Amino acid sequence: MLSDHGGVRLPHVEESSTRQVGRRVVIAALVLVACVLIVYAGRDGYTDNNGGEISLLDATYYATVSLSTTGYGDIVPASPSARLLNILLITPLRIMFLLILIGTTLEALTASSREEFRIRRWRSRVRQHVIVCGYGTKGRSAIRALLANGTDPASILVVDPDVAAIEEATAAGFTGVLGDAGRTEVLRRTAVEKARAVIVAAHRDDAAVMITLTVRQLNPSVPITASVREEENASLLRQSGADSVITSSAAAGRLLGLSTDSPRVVAVVEDLLTAGQGLDLIQRQAGQSEVGLGPRQLRDVVLSVTRRGRTLRFDDPLIGTLESEDVLVVVKSKR
Image 1: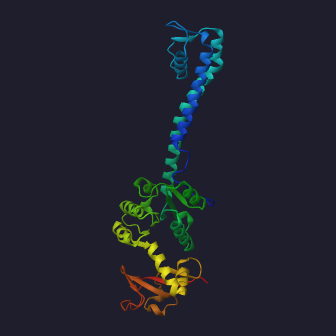
Image 2 (image 1 turned 90 degrees about the vertical axis):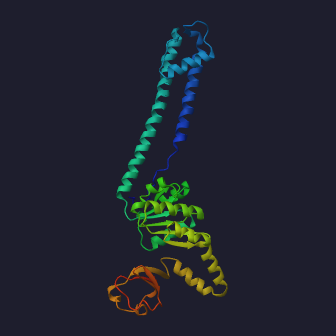
Image 3 (image 1 turned 180 degrees about the horizontal axis):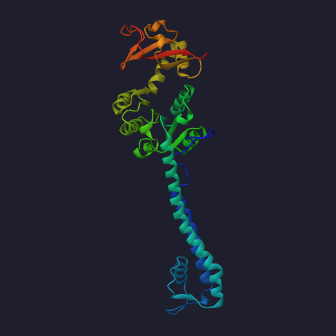
């Protein structure tokens, strides 16, 4: 899916088709103006079957039908000089004009086919990837945590409507999709139906809700973790289909409050949230050697045990002894 030195951008961000066509229209207009001026400057060498002198309108009419190869024959070059100018100047301009028109069509078709091929090839190869919707501060932090936990950069896909953000993501080795993650056609390009997880790190809460709804519509079973700024919107995210909701403003506020009276508590929390150094929070399956033991008998500090879909705190007496299917959240030291 990715090379060893960089990421893949889907779709590839190229000059917009509107700008490409606009540039060619300007060139074609300049060619037409040049042809009109040449004909009008040598108007004495042309004859009109309807009689009369060649006017600027007649010169424009002749240039138009000549460049388009229509050639009605009502205005024709009669003098040797006019015919020579047609051979040396008008004919090359006609060829240039046709190449501009044909080139625009061919380039548009070729670019579309190339992008469609790249997208189909990528979709056929991608499996079990993580989609990060939003490459702002929260999105970057989430990716750093994924990398610290051993996630392959090749399995991380970033969706963002900002071109600069996608360019930065692909330069870092991730796959980038330019567009609004709340739109179905954009998420379809991410192969969301094959994803193992989706992280919603949108800048606005309403955008996070729309993204979550769209993801859940396309993949009813993929785990979705969403971030919201306001705690009052957390329930709305859960109703939209998010499995986990993190309230950034509320979490920051709690840490600010704790820092006043319990600064060491804040230091420990920050250590736990910083992956790859000091203390880390790890989710893992209970090992065979741990089955039958109590949570306090393990070397790792057990914070919770999930059993048959129910999560129990470390001090819950219902845990009893560990079973083979238990999923543990533990604190481990990276030192």
